[in-house]
Amino acid sequence: MYDLIIIGMGASGISAGIYAKRSGLKVLLLEQNMPGGVINKIASIENYPGFKSITGPDLATNLYDQVKSLNIPYKLETVTDVILDKIKTIKTNHNIYQAKYLLIATGRKPKFLGLEHEQELLGKGISTCALCDGAFYKNQDVAVVGGGSSALAEALYLANIVHKVYLIHRRNEFRGEEILIENVKNTKNIELILNEEITSLIIEDTKLKGLKLKNKELTVTGLFIYIGFIPNTDFLQNTNLNMENGYLIVNDKYETNIEGVYASGDVIKKDIYQIINASSEGAMAILNIIKQINY
Ligand code: NAP
Image (spheres, rainbow, N blue to C red):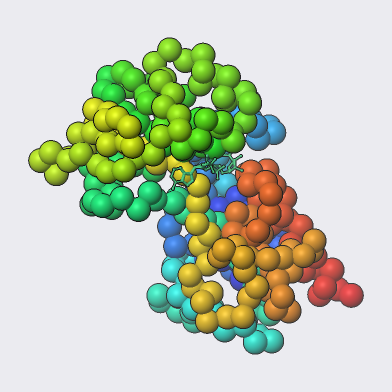
């Protein structure tokens, strides 16, 4: 029996794990993919204090190293179901665990456009990770779709590698940060394609060769999709946790509507999705759990 199980080893789950372990709680971290979560896919982070500039994979490695150096128990297993009685039962693909408290910090995954052949072309022209796949498109023409900070930041990253980046956005205003918008506008090999939507993919020999938009066609060998995210809450389908569009609803103590179940990071419904607040929320959730245990 654990005091606390934390599902997810992104910035929020790991921050929570650090606070829990240092507070003497018997804690277990569970992660289905790579520790660091979505941070692994960010090319460059320049707004996280303590690092003037750091790559996502380097920050993820630092977080993982801290888990190991503090001897925080963790398992790389996929949670398939949870039973949220007074004692929380967590089923994974390999084991069943029990804990008095549960923190859900499972983050979210990239959204797709829903176009025909989109999934088959993943790794063959379509990507959700410029940092991972950008180098395959050296000196070629590629497109980025989306109008938030992710699309802007990754278009800037790709512009240093590829010949040309078409940045396709469905409106004529970006919702991303002003500094990124300015930088994109000042980058010669980024062409803005505004008020446009991709209607289909042009494929030749099972590879992407271009895009059909509503009003034109583009010849590109790569399409990088940055149109937002979907929260990772599928494994909670048998629970009565309050959610909105799949995001968990929490109060200012990071408590869900079920006693002893907390949530933090990108999986919760909130206004700002940044690494810094995901980390802070993980720590705050643990401090609130400790108060609950002690008083
Ligand atoms: P986001 O802010 O949700 O933006 C998603 C973009 O995709 C929007 O521009 C949206 O268009 C567009 N979109 C959504 N569905 C679409 C569809 N089906 N077809 C075409 N376009 C579609 O997502 P994000 O850019 O990934 O950012 C997520 C969070 O991370 C934000 O809070 C952001 O500030 C943060 N972030 C920060 C940094 C940084 O450097 N500080 C970097 C990356 C991300 P509309 O605008 O028309 O809705």
